[in-house]
Length: 502
Figure 1 (tube, rainbow, N blue to C red):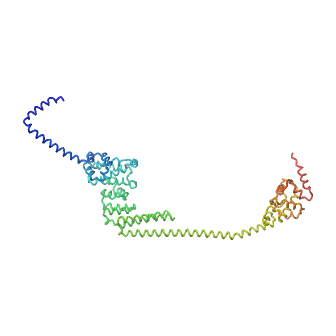
Figure 2 (spheres, rainbow, N blue to C red):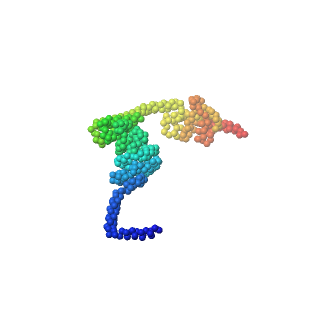
Figure 3 (cartoon, rainbow, N blue to C red):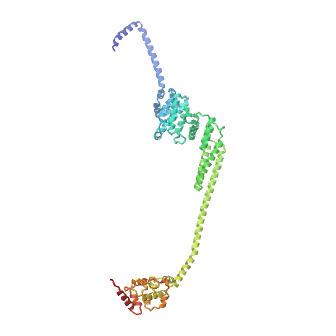
């Protein structure tokens, strides 16, 4: 501001020197203003033609480009409206695209799996690589080096391969390899073709294969063979049709190899087991594959080929085999049921035939026991309806007589363990007590006792213990059965009195 004072008078003095031209100065000034307005309008029009996307690309702002495309998705849906022009404005479009996708391609596997925007980022990269290929921009050496490093990091993260589940990422990787010419840098044509086979069923698989820039005459046979090995004959047919190479690769042999592969798939299931379930599963697998072939033939309008007739013939054979197995299974079930029924009938006949033999055996046992004077068998043989009347039965009288005779001969006190020959005593009901007392009062004979078999002799203690049930006095039966009243009783008392507790 110190120099401002002297300059003002100098400026006034300068203007005074041109005072004679003031009349013409007004017209000249107006011309300058008009020219400046024209220039301003022209520049404004030119600046209005530059969009925000072009400004971002001209500044090589990869992060800004990605953010802009995520928000404005229409730019990718209609790329010719602004995206292609914006990429051409960029000093190095290849580097710009790699900068926009660097965060996605180099993300760790665990981050890539958990990131919810992974699919969005993948679609963004695919769209940018597609536009680079369309505009035909040749990548610079710097861009190619950066792309090589990105591909190495991407592949090293094990996110790319034939076995990965996210095939869209493999497709994006193939586009990157094709745009920047990195086939030899990522493992060679063999590995790249394996990736193509892994995504062969996707819609744009042919575009990815063509974008690799491989010689079709050299690598198309290799690709077809790899697809056959992976049982992707139908995808191979799509490649042949899309590339207009039917004259070099006839479709009929390829489709016949598909039928053979379907039969082999069913055979592998049959080998695992010969049971009906395995057979049915094998038929179902082969029928499913053949049904897919029928649908494919109709979609691709290949009905004129004889392959459709061959597929229908094989399906008819499978249906016939399945029906025969069902009939055989039904016949086997019916035969098994008949065999079971026959066995049951034979068992019933055997049981019926054995009934008379069982009855005769029982009768023989009853008769044999009667001859041995066994009281229990005699009671059952006589069919006594009431057990309390067993003592009235005539078959029991000899036995009871024998028991009374044995008791009279045994003068041991109750509870002694002397062993004497007595007849086997059968527990008699209480109703037989009267008959027992009546019969026991008769005198015994030695011949009667001798007739009892030795095999039936038991200790007399059992007979005496039964007497306790019928009388309060354990020697009452002895007293009643003796011919000399009281003799046995007195003798027993005399024996018992000799017991010395000391």
